[in-house]
Length: 115
Ligand SMILES: [Zn+2]
Ligand SMILES: [Zn+2]
Image (cartoon, rainbow, N blue to C red; front, side):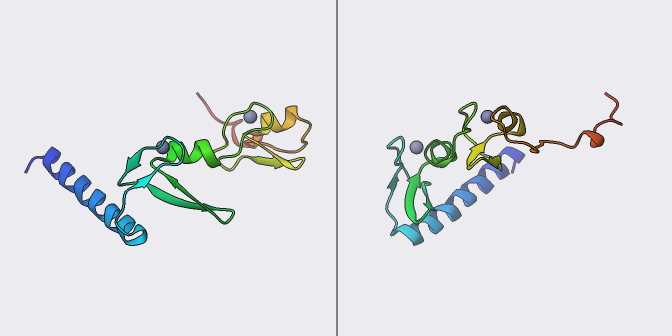
């Protein structure tokens, strides 16, 4: 068996396992993504704030569920920064909206770097 053949086999096994898990939780039916409308057998559910959502990809889940930075408007898909009762994507955006003390990195940690 070639390396490509093994990778292909492993990928199919992973998809099969994923599908069985999905089938177990959803009665074996295809589920339609609530963002793009794609009916896909690898769709998955997310429960957020008590509401059930169905997506065919993480991209669609982020589009619907991720908070938006109150300064630049980008989707926050990491930890983000919480300040002034809202969310920001990074310390720079938080600082530009008047949040004090937020940092993305500690300056002392990078002073000895040689590039
Ligand atoms: Zn979708
Ligand atoms: Zn931002």
